[in-house]
Image 1 (cartoon, rainbow, N blue to C red):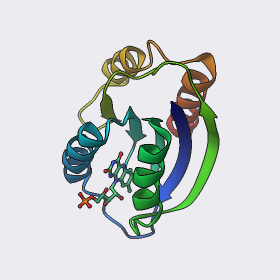
Image 2: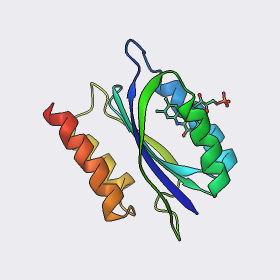
Image 3: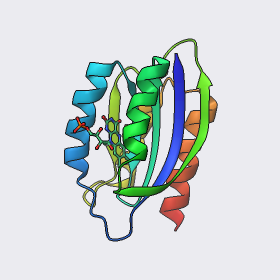
Length: 131
Ligand SMILES: Cc1cc2nc3c(=O)[nH]c(=O)nc-3n(C[C@H](O)[C@H](O)[C@H](O)COP(=O)(O)O)c2cc1C
């Protein structure tokens, strides 16, 4: 089992259709046995993908070719014994979400994540909140 974590930034001027992205990803990732989590505030993306090695590579190759974001940096790419995310989910802090409600959702998503993965998500969220 492979787990890949990357960060990226929306392309300048790109308006990312997060609802459309969620629908496509849920459909494809379910089909391909890929689980994980995508966090976005519509400007930055932090995504963990996990599954069979070749399946993770195929989805990541499509993601890398997507012109709606750029500056893709892989933070880690490692073998894991068991999945840390049971499903593929997306967490977006929309304008109507309170920080508390969002924190509770993220805690739920990250409940089984390793300290490294959880720390990376929490660090980025704190940095974006402080920006
Ligand atoms: C930040 C970001 C994350 C994405 N995550 C996924 C994903 O987890 N799974 C997926 O299939 N596509 C994802 N996409 C969309 C892909 O880039 C691509 O548009 C899509 O896989 C094409 O699917 P289709 O061939 O079924 O139309 C993501 C795109 C972006 C910008």
